[in-house]
Image (cartoon, rainbow, N blue to C red):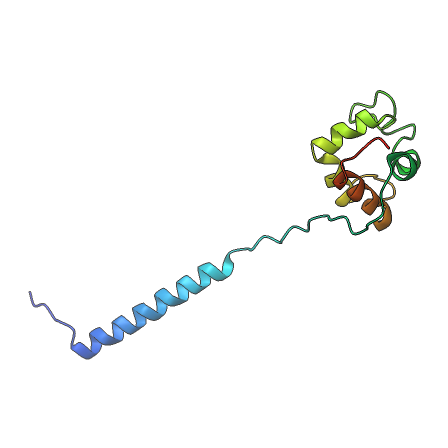
Length: 128
């Protein structure tokens, strides 16, 4: 049996091809990684003091506390009282659902209304 050896030139060619293939593979793998989008953080953009009674409760009455939604005894949260609302503020679901537009389902809040909630929560979500 005869073994044939590669010449130095052939070895260099194979090394270059191997390096190119490996580089292409690394680039392909890294290019295919999906970068998750950066989450936007809701920030209060006003100096105005937001009052629960004056600003938040009217929005709740108009958009949330109707006969089919967050009224007395509603399993997903009773927003007829501040205590029911605070529960959803504290677990983070209130802003999450308002921000992604899933609540209220029929007509999402305006940017101004969403800002009122953001500022009221950032300011300590007081019963004022």
